[in-house]
Length: 266
Image (cartoon, rainbow, N blue to C red; front, side):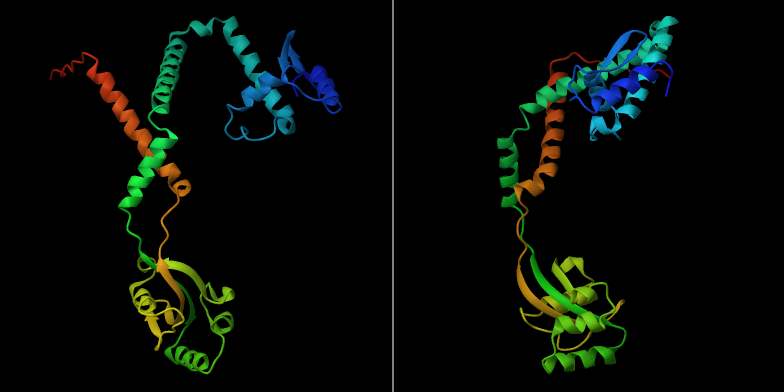
């Protein structure tokens, strides 16, 4: 803790335990200048690792960071460093970036609306092909003999999920071999070919060999894969519309401007 703020900071933090904090609550003074809780909360937003945390929970750390920054800035201004050519150039670049972002944000706001997002979603869904998918279980064992023995047990009425939980060496074994829903391209070709040849309730008539071992597969259900919802597609569609909007804005700006590219001489 820095001496410049120790007494003031300590007393204010203790007071904060019994009084509600507001944006105008003074939480420290540095060289006679008050620092408010609101200032610290705004400063916290500029720190990615702390932006989502409760300001009250990390107040001492954020406050000390803020005080250190103010002390360095004050010392730098005392040397006139705000007028240093490099500093002024960096400030100009930062200003240009912020102004550019503000302009594009304003322009994009009217070009990426909820209605336009919904229209883009509907258009994309019109051409989206629903793939067949199945819901299946499997039992994975090391040898063909083990797999054939499992098929005999299942034919005699043994519960498939119970056998998978007991015998399967695959990661889905503890879940009764449940693989959930999947499309053909998700599994290795031998497995997919066997699974998609079955009707719901069917079990592979013979063991299926893959690089992982020998499989006995049961398909529990089949359907066309549901279309993604607009909520699921929202980030992708928003990004696509934003990219198109920025391209459109830049095309318009260039169209209104006189631009001449001068080649470099050799």
